[in-house]
Length: 309
Ligand SMILES: [Zn+2]
Image (cartoon, rainbow, N blue to C red):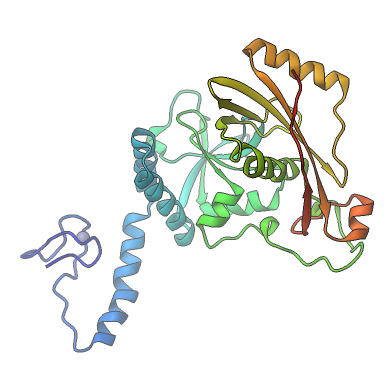
C-alpha cells in the first residue's frame, strides 16, 4: 500500500515513515466518499507538509546545486504553495523597514529562503510574516521589479511576471485594463514607471532581435539609466546593448550617452549596440499626448538596432 500523500510504500505501517501521515488504513463505502476525503484531508496535508518555508530553503539549495529543470520546477511549486497557504517567510529589515535590494540595476524586496542559512552581511533584524504581505507591497509599488531571495548568498530573482504566473495572485499592473477611448481620469500611479517601460522594451528586443539573431544572453541589467541592459555573445564576440524606450517617439541618443557607451564597450573589447524603441498607445489620443497607462494596449515601434562602433 502506498501513502496517499507522498506515495511512499508503507504496507504494515499505521503512520507513513516518510511524511508522517497517520490515516493510512482508511476504508470507504463509496468512490464519492473517497474523493471527498482526498480533497478534505489528503490535499491539505500534502500542502502543509510539502510547501513549508523549510522545504523552500532546501529547494533553493538544490536549485543552486543542480540547476536542472526539475529543481526549478520543485522550487517554483513550493513558492506557489507558500503563497497559496499564506505561509510565513522571513525578510531582513533595517530600522523596521523592509530591505529593498539593488540588484543588476533594479530594486527588489529581499526575503530569506531559510533562516538557518543566513550568512555574514545579512541584516541583524528580521521580520517574519505571510508571504502574501510581501506580494501586496510589491504589487503596490510599480518601481519594484520583484523579490530577490537570499540577497547575500546565491541570490535568486523572482520578477513580477514570474510571481504573477506562478501563483493565483495576479499582478494588477500586468493585467489588461480597459481605459476606454481618449484620455481617461488617471493619477500618477496609473502611468507606467521607467522600470516598467524598460522591462517591456527589453522583452520586445529580446524576442524580436536577440533570440532571432542567435545571440546568447550572458546577463541582463534592468537599470533605466545604466549600461548595458544586455550583455550578449555571438561567435565569441561580446556585445553590450543599451535598450532605450520612449513613449510614442523613439528616444534620440545624445552625444554624451554615445561616448559613455562606447567607452564602456572599449574597456571590455565589446561591440556596442543601441536598441531604441517606442511604445505607442493603441488609443490615438493617448498616443498623441504620450500617455502610457499600465495595462493599456500598445504598438511597439521597433525596427533596427544600431551598431555604434
Ligand atoms: Zn507519506
